[in-house]
Image (cartoon, rainbow, N blue to C red; front, side, top):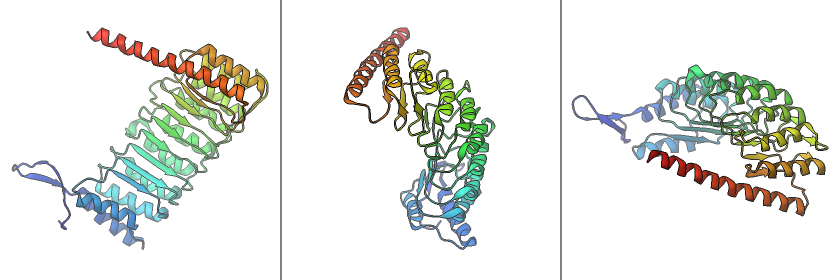
Amino acid sequence: MSGKKAVKKGKGSAGNDAEDDSTERFLALYGKKCKELGITIPAKIREKINDALDEGEFLTDLNIWDPIGWEGAKALGEALFGIKYDKLKTLRFWKCGIEDNGLRYICNYLGSNKSVEVLEVMDNGVTSLGCEFLGRVLKKEAESPITTLKLDHNPIHAAGVAMLAQGLVMNGTIKILSLNYAEIEKEAATPLVHVLLYIKSQLKELYLKGNNLENEGVAEIMKAVQVAKSLAKIDFADNKIKEAGAEGMVTKEIASAVTFEGCSVRSYDFSYNYFDDEAVDKIKNKLEEGGFVSDFKLALKLDEDYQLAFKKILDINKKKAKKASKAKKAKKTKKKK
């Protein structure tokens, strides 16, 4: 050992405390892989690993915002894979420039890993090719434990969503999927619908802000939203929706969803899109009629009367939801007794 504390794992066969030196071995292999590529371990990453070693703790989260490039991701991924490091729970890359090639090596590690639950690859130049690698990781047979996946600000387009969907279509672990500002077109609606309709899906939050789904794409997804088993929140903000009249395709699907008691979604965001007065009136009336949606965001430029009306309806719905929740808990308690 090199003087760093190893984490005690449990009693060995001779009754001695067995030590887990996987973090130290990971650091050594990581350094070796970097040297082979003619790069160095970024200071902040080395400090994070050394801090864990000094405290005798495992490396459970790794948040990287250094511009490590694909080479840095390769060195990291190969080191994690080589050690079979199974202590990491959270892995985040924020504007690191790892691109598809770097993500390939991270996915090689994730393909056999059973510890990482949160993966964020934000603004890294990832395209549909990188989504293909991720789709393999997310397939049912891979048994990935990932519950949160964020790919915001990557140009994945509809083709990338289709690749992701190949893994997500029968995935029962993902709970949060964020694809904000990912240049996604309306053609992505169909694969997203397939993901939402999976009967064992655990997806609770879906973020699609800042894309190009337009009326057609949003309307198609909203049909599936109404029957999704676990979805509670969806974000369609800034998707180039332009609705005129009470019978617009998106307005009609919103009206259907917010009045269908079987729909599990309680939070919608349609801000930074255009809905004319007739569309807004219909949505407002249907929210009141349904009585269960407690969070609904629409155009920021609604006049004061509309804003007050929406607030009043949503406040009443929140109170109804709290009352229903209390009644449900009381019923469960009574059954146990």
